[in-house]
Length: 290
Image (cartoon, rainbow, N blue to C red; front, side):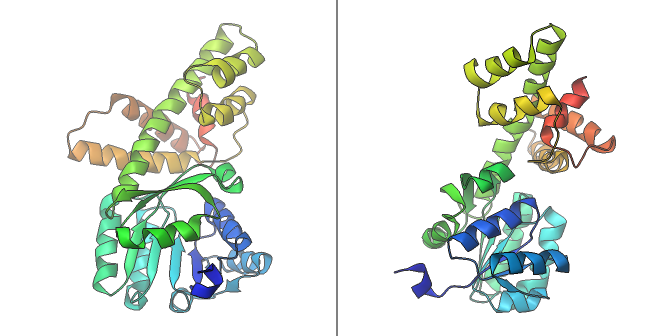
């Protein structure tokens, strides 16, 4: 059955750096019906650019659509949106692509289910560049029976859409990734700083870490050149990395899991935030080691 024949209307709520790009990809694959953002101008402009339906208020947006994708900042913003739409959730599928506490997400999913709807956590691995290249990884948690539909919807913006388990499983997997990412970024910054202080030319440092190192990765490919040139234009922000590491830290403390490397990364990203660099790219971790 073609997507058009299914007649399932898809709405995206949250048109920030990631949400706006995901909306564009879904529009390009013919799967986007409408958009909503609390910033009216942003929602109206995006709707016009993507030939999508603009909704001036949240409730009417949800009531007029079948699949609701949310890409929001934190636990508070996600909880606020879902608290407002619980009453109209019956028969609808919600896909939250935000990175928040698994515990918060599980609780929201229970409330949605109690009101006749269904919810999935579907956080992503990848920056705004990955969205533009349509090679995000999406980690899905929720009812297995609806996973195929979620995969079909998101196939226009991701090259890997993986079922992780029940509600919350996608978020736990995402936090594992970002724990690693935060620690890895700290190590990359140390390596770049050591190379520079040792008098190694920038192009050689770049080649070693990006081309030849056994620890090279897509992250080193993106971030090492940014550190070397001190280009902190945002792909994934310091404030978002800090938010995720703080979630990891709280869960680890509650479960008595020692995380010495992630704890150091958390301190460094917190330093960047309080010194005014929260809106910069995570490559700005290099600043903290100068």
